[in-house]
Image (cartoon, rainbow, N blue to C red; front, side, top):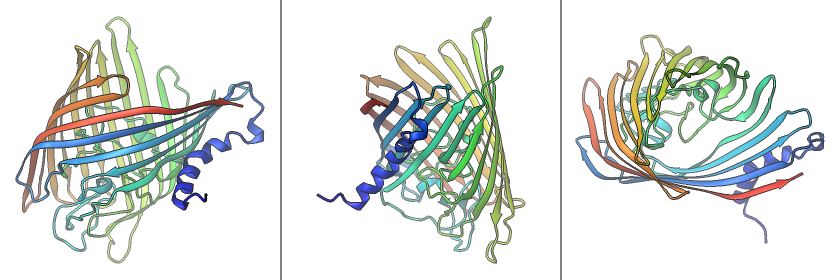
Amino acid sequence: MRRAPAVNRVLYGLLTPSLLLTWPGYAQSDGPLETEFEVESVTVLMPIADSNAQIEEKFALGEISLIGQSEKVLENGLRLRARGALRLQQDHPTRPGGIGGFGSDAFAAAGAFSGLSSAAPIDDSDIRGRFETAYLQVDGGYGELRIGKDRGVAARFHEGAKSVLSHARLDSALLDPTGLSSIRTRHDLTGPSPKISYATPRLIGIRAGVSFTPDADADGLDRRPAASADGLSPETENAIELALNASRRLRDSGLRIDVGLGWSSADVSASELTPQFGTVETWSAGTRIEHDDWTFGTSWLSSDNGVSDGDYSAWSTGLHKEAYSTDFSLEYGESTDDFARLDSNGWRVGAARDIGRHARLSIAYLRDEIESPLRQWENEGVVVEVTLSQKIVQLTGN
């Protein structure tokens, strides 16, 4: 029976990186080729909500992911890895990929980093499917090289607050039940656009990295740098990212301190309708401090959004505690977008617990608020997040 074209594309996207590792030039090794596939689903429910916003909360959102990875170690110690991830997602219809319109201006452009604008909200209720990850990695004594669809080093080296929510979290949410989540300190300028990244080995606890993205044209599930709400979208290219990550454990006190720093710059193409765009520059910093069962985290980001007098800035902080086989967390953050003329704040307080080996249940109370010169949006309520994960295939061969 002939396989459907859509199925062919799925298998090709997940298996092609793995097949490249079996190329004869790589076959001369002592280590076997290890391959595994994992499936994960996340469901976010908001059964109790109190809203005065025209943007209504959504009772149910969700995502399912199929993740494949192959790894092989060569005789000289070089490690080769291929990874692919297919994700299907149903997010808030006004906030696919984090973009959002909070006004009525038909010609309003979105910020090159924030993705927010004063354009009219969109209504996109379709289930979206994307290959968010598809890269090859070479890892050895001189560092790590990645080529393909992946996040840049500024996002990968991020440090900040730890949350019991993986997807409906406060900062850089992946699923947004209120439609009002706009706090983003995770320094992800280019999303899953194809790129090349290099990261040094960790020396005396410090690691550096650089990424280059020729065209930030990804229409990702979490980041859509080439899209906007109901207005105009900037086109970002020649993006370069630099990042540092430092980790240090103080044996006498038992403290572990992690720090992440990031900088990025990219060209934003201008047209007759968007003459204000030029170059977008973004800075970020964050830290996570752990002691026994307590974790404190805070992070900050500032971007000029690619325009003069249109800065986007955000910060968040949080406290996490493990007790009685349960995780507890409290988060708060704020953001300001001068380009879209929006101020926002939000908080989360909740608990999470593993249920068996393959399930996790999180329950939290949340509140999100966005304010413009003309109106205010508020939404709060109870959110339930259910995560199921399972390895479905594990193969070892030559």
